[in-house]
Image (tube, rainbow, N blue to C red):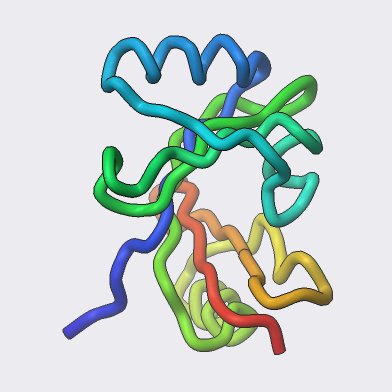
Length: 124
């Protein structure tokens, strides 16, 4: 069996407006706080979606300077290794591993077709 998708993100310049939109559209409720890193969302602007509603862990965030995107994260045992493998297979690293410390690390890469994909795993 392959590695599971464990998290999704919807990011934009106005995270409060996005949370309102998706909350009304899909009846999502949020716990607003900080993302794993400021590179993902401005501090205090990341709304974690209630897992019982969304099915998997997810969030809506962003802020000024954050490009709109929809992104999913795949669980990996080592984020750095996954990013190196993505590059070796023709992708390009975009972010990470971040943060440098803590219990949880994320990374992002662009596949050969230009799709942004995230990887997440334990910190080393």
